[in-house]
Image (cartoon, rainbow, N blue to C red; front, side, top):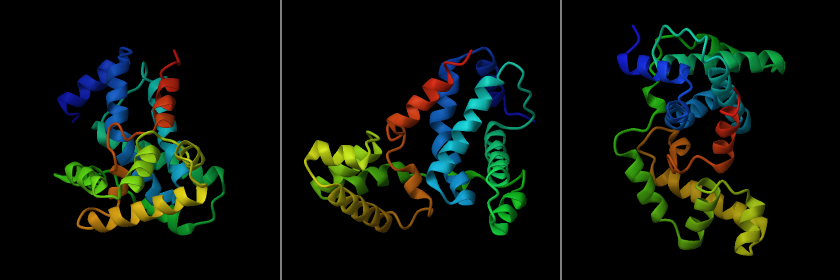
Length: 208
């Protein structure tokens, strides 16, 4: 049975409610990307899979028939797109395919969402980074800038930016090691969704 709140969200999207669609996108993007990454082991590919799922959701919103919860629909869609990716690109990995095919409808997806207290811990961990390292990290994760753009903005070498990002991630992993291993997918939640990703969802919603 579909939860009442999910029914309301689905109905709002069917009626072209862009705010409802964007809300679902922002709340689900990082967990779905973490789930996709688990199977494809490549961040750009994981991002493309999730963006394709949301594109399909928007394009088919008027005729969409959903008989499960919002969470299960989205994660199942990512799983199916992951299988399609493996087929399309002839990825020769029996292990990846086995993992995707074994993903069950009743799988517990809660581990892909932020744990209680995680968001506050993340912000505290970021604030504990050295000033310049923190600035570089926020420009990359919060502003969505590429390393070369950060280097130009701060008058640094690209190599220095890469090194500082590596050190930042290492320090954050250590600070947040008590949490789920996929914690880095939730860094800078909300505003931490890159400008590029926001542009992608805006492009999706341009479709009639």
